[in-house]
Length: 114
Image (cartoon, rainbow, N blue to C red; front, side, top):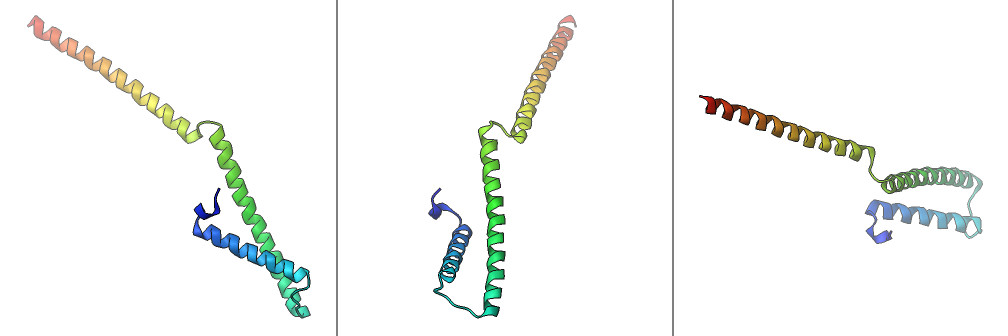
């Protein structure tokens, strides 16, 4: 999948998360210094952000796996029910044709006997 074909919100999310991870790396390497209170706020925010990214990533990965597994198995349950409904409609059409032919023959026989 090309990143340029992804929705804009997804691209922005990837950019923000990447920028934040670069910010975390620069903080860990000591390029950015904070006071103790700022450090506590920063770590709590980073734990929240990483947790949020993990949950969102898990959801998106789960959706991707579910979509791929359903598409490789053939038809989805909804498609199967629609195919059964189509067969039922075709069978009903055949029955209606046979009934109409029988009625037409009966009407013709009555007309001939009169």
